[in-house]
Image (cartoon, rainbow, N blue to C red; front, top):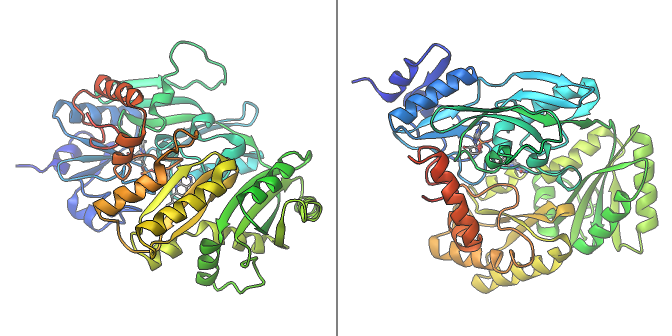
Length: 461
Ligand SMILES: Cc1cc2nc3c(=O)[nH]c(=O)nc-3n(C[C@H](O)[C@H](O)[C@H](O)COP(=O)(O)OP(=O)(O)OC[C@H]3O[C@@H](n4cnc5c(N)ncnc54)[C@H](O)[C@@H]3O)c2cc1C
């Protein structure tokens, strides 16, 4: 009897299919269980994708959508008997319109490919994150990705104008609107943003673009705490003629760990400060951005509690500063599979939050230490533990309690920008509003009554 991948391969020459042997030799990406499926299918068009989904629906075959496999919540995991719907062959940039400032792209286009295609038009997608080389527009929409520029440009939801989605029964919802204003009934495109592949397979999107400001200047600023960082951020956000386009905070443990891993000596970076703020300004040219950065930091020095600062004097030095913040693999190389978390905290409460969770972890186990860093301007903190492997169930539940108790009441979120996937399923049931969860279940039931799209992730039926 033919195996699943052989049957799927028979659905048309416009669907490229890999079987389990091929998959076993491929890089699974950021989760070792991503490629457990019996087949990975790469449709070359929306029509091919719809044919594939329809066949799977008629034959009760479960599907897991995948883009760049950089997701961090286990939402891309797949298992035997399932088919992966890959966007690898839906990677065309269909249009960049410099007057309307919109891009029409296939879901498999990587963020970096879009950034590179926009640059000659003096434009950029207005969103950026460290996984830019692999993360795809489809995956970023499905996780409602945020990243470095979210504090000024919003998250993926705010960049999206139009969408095309293959629904779980194989029908295609086409809403390729390219205008900001459309008040024509329920704005259903947003259902698929942050759904982590549980409601449909995104094939195409229309995104808003912004002007690319080429002149850049960066600095690492040693500060007392997050409150100091926020005072500095407020100053630069209020300046005219310059744009703040990066404000990342690394608490000392993280900054020191990464500086050591990258061989950065004390003196090249403010490692004695309790926290290090990485700032980036954009202006017409790099020199004026650097001057404004130096002037601003000088003026703020005493008032904002600046302890030390290093301003990059070349692009190369700028890149090295950013690498220290963005390269989190150093920690995972040291502590393979370390548990990591991603929360949103109202920015003004970040200092109190970090102090509280440190105390909470110490009470559980004094040896359990968090590396804390994140997109401080919007209060998004990332936390990685100093031990390899996932935490056992009991420890994990206690850690969740420390991290998430009271967060919703303060206006924060137990998941900022990575999603729920599998890793935050328990937190979703415990910390998301029960009425909201019931509505989510009924939406899932309506669109995917057979629970064939990414079952077991986000919403439990
Ligand atoms: C080093 C590193 C840094 C990161 N930094 C950030 C950051 O700053 N901000 C941030 O928000 N995230 C960040 N991430 C997380 C990650 O990059 C995002 O979650 C990204 O949006 C996932 O895109 P992807 O193409 O890799 O999706 P995948 O990992 O392939 O999939 C992620 C989810 O989307 C679904 N999916 C994928 N494609 C589709 C589709 N076409 N239709 C429907 N569902 C689909 C999958 O089923 C899965 O649920 C980082 C990750 C890494 C490894």
